Image 1 (cartoon, helix red, strand yellow):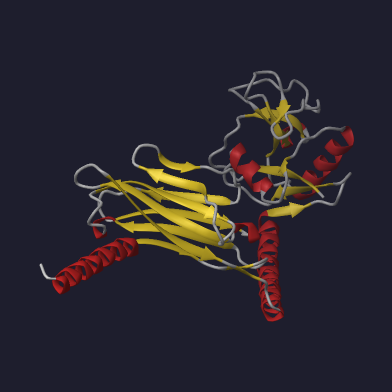
Image 2 (cartoon, helix red, strand yellow; image 1 turned 30 degrees about the vertical axis):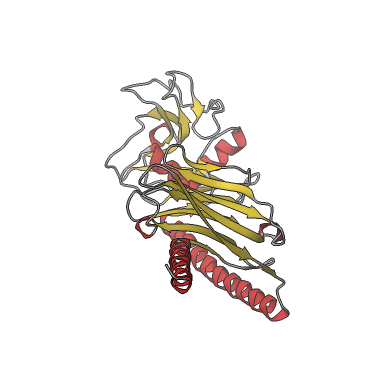
Length: 324
């Protein structure tokens, strides 16, 4: 082979090898966004490999993401990896870091890092490494890097963010006001509210067609309360008079007392404290599995026990206790 032919042969083959190498590197993508200190909410670093775009790698074994805080003479520390045996592995203990990744035999394989509220420590060089084997079972490794830089926010960006926060606050305040007005309207539609006694108010249902303790407790909790727990003579007289004045159409007004867990041991459903004894004469008698306490009209609104579930009755109400 003449000298000129040898030179052309070497040049062509070098060009082919270089093109082959660049093509394989371009198949491995690492993507990362720069951050603005104090304003960027998340930094995403993604390592993506389209498997069939690497001719020399017949099988991908793992993807790894490494980080160096310095770009000059970088010293890389492995952050996370994903492989076909162990799955996803994190190598640093970072509460603000979320990782995800998957090795797929077909299509795309990926490894993703998300840093929440990134700082300057998250800037620098990120390196993605792909490790696999060729058709002869020999190792094949390729890598790619990306630089993440930090910028200090200028005054216009800060003003813009403040305006966004102010607009969001005003919007939320308006929505909260609308919710509170609807919340209050719903309460006034369903309940009659008492005056205050020792830091508590009481809500008595205006009408009812059924009663289940879980439903009543849920309704009370909507207003940050619970089924009434009568703990003192003053409270008993106050709630009893409130019911007499506003609930005479009821025969029964349910409270929070129950002995469902242990027959004969009465406790308050919410606080688990013992029920105070304001029973009508001869009560509680547990007639027909009566496990829930109530004010009883036929006993001059003293306490009685009754079944806990009433499926269809306009004569049964309940009373909530609301701390204020």
